[in-house]
Image 1: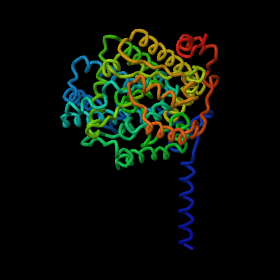
Image 2: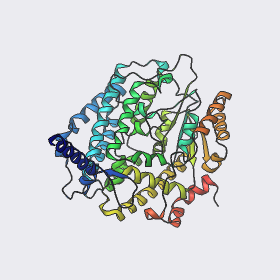
Image 3: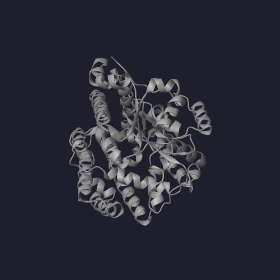
Image 4: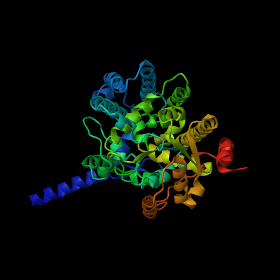
Length: 464
């Protein structure tokens, strides 16, 4: 009887804990659910953690930042102008976490602070790795010449589809999620033949699996917009987030949005360091290309669009591809993606304000991206530029790729064509579910979007 009582008591305890950790919605309307302990933490009305409190849990930021500057000077020969630009960006992003009136939940504020610490450590490790790796001229130039293809433009315009389709060509090298998320300290780059078998990838995969402890459906909802996985071909955003680690601050901190916009648009700010560092990372990976290989990089990131001048200077012979799509799809789809990405860290107590904030922020962001794309293409004379219409690309993706290859000076061989056909058969549209979004949900109207994106529609989509 005693043993039975103990067993029953144990079952009751387990049941109690299971009920505590059962799923709750992050808000009444969003589809993302969070586990009970996060749900309860975010519902607390107590004061959010402050800088002093979090520095007791994590490494002090000031000490780490000083080492970032020192190691990056040694690795990349960054000068005083680059140091000043990096420091301004770092400080505005850190300030965004503590800004009064920001939209972080207590959990979100803590996690974003932790992510900043992780990114600073990642930058230090990468800089030390570059210092220890005396790259040869071949390593510096491999894959970065005239045949490199760079995909930019607005998000949610089909750029991922084109990027991953091009990756099916065995002579194409595209970054994977796991190698961008890896801490680079004393880590050797991965040969192309080992990208899907390297044991380090599984360590990154475990980190993604850990998300289920916080949210049971976050990845499944995110995958409806953009498939995430350790072995997935990925844009350069994970690498760039080491520097723009305010992806969340930008969503939740109005002052950070404003100050970052001023930083990006200031012609006196030297922003070239981002792409100097990116080229070093690419060269490090390219050092594993087989001798005599014709392998070429294909890079993609909508986040390149505000930095097209810097991209042009870093990759002067690249073919630049812009993917374009109806703003009536782009804007609400981007809103939906931000909602999913923000759900775990947002303070949803003022839900109506959050929906409107996401809508206003997204439309403003898309107008800005469109403006930068149009301004740059009108004045640039250096690059081959290709503009794609999403609807036309869907009709015949292989025809689109053949056109890209032709203009980029690359051969569209039969083996590449067969690999791409197989990729299309395996990766059908909406394979991971259809994302749910609408203009109305985020307080936007068709008329408002049309007014803000009219010039873009006329220039790239043939609207009259």
